[in-house]
Amino acid sequence: MQSLREKGRVVRGYIGASVQTLTPELAEAMKFKGQPTGALVGEVTPKSPSEKAGMKTGDVITSVNGKKISDARELRLMIGSMAPGTKVQIEVNREGQSKNINVELAEMPPGEAEQGAETTPEESAQPEKATVFGGVAVADVTDDIRTALNLSKDVKGAVIAEINADSPAAKAGLREGDVIQEVNKQPVRNAKDLVAISKKLKPNEKILIRVWSQGRSGFVALEPK
Image (cartoon, rainbow, N blue to C red; front, top):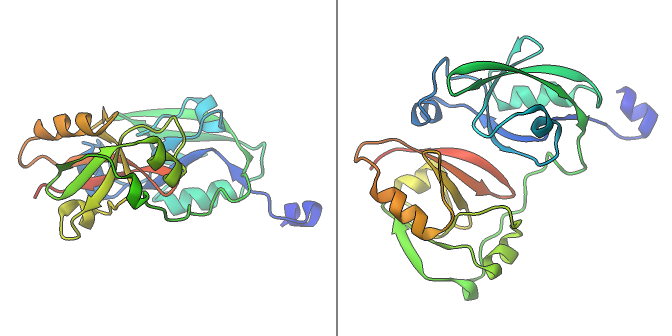
C-alpha cells in the first residue's frame, strides 16, 4: 500500500464509530423499519468525524458512496481501505428515515481496531446488587468498579456483577463486567433505574439493550424468557 511505502506503516481511514452487524433479532427488538442489513452504530466517539458529521447512536449505516453495506465487517474494510482526508457520503437509517451524512475520514488511531482486554470488577469492590432479566445481578458503578473496568466517567449505567449462565441474557451475550446503559432506548443511570425499567416491560416484549463491554458500546437483543 502507498501509505506503507511512504510512512512505513499502514494508515487507515477512520470515522470514529463503534459498529456491529444489524441482525434480524436486533432489528426486531429495535422495531427497525426496512431490510435488516447494515452496520448498527453502538457508540459515536466524541470529537470524531462521525460526531462532527451528525451521526448518532442507533443509526444503521446502509451504504457508503452508494455502495450497499451488508454488515459491520464490510463497513470496516471499506472505510479502512480509504485514506485519511477522503470525503465520503454515508447513508443511514434513523428511526425509519433515510439520511445522508457527509464525513471526512480521519486517521485511525493506533490500536483502535483491537478488542479491549477482558476485565471484571474486583471481588472486594462489590456493592449492593439487584436482580433483573431473570438471572442478572446488577449494581451501581462505584469508583472502584470504574477503575477496575477502566471505565471513563461519561459512561453511566448499571454493571453486571453476576449472571446465570443459563439465563436468556447470558445466551444473548451479556456477561459480568458489562455495563447496561439503555433498555429499549431508555437511559439507565444506575441499578435503581434498571430495576424500575425492567418492571415495566411487557411479558413477551423483545428487549433492546445498549451495553458497554470491553471498551466499547453496542447493542444486544434479549428474548423474553
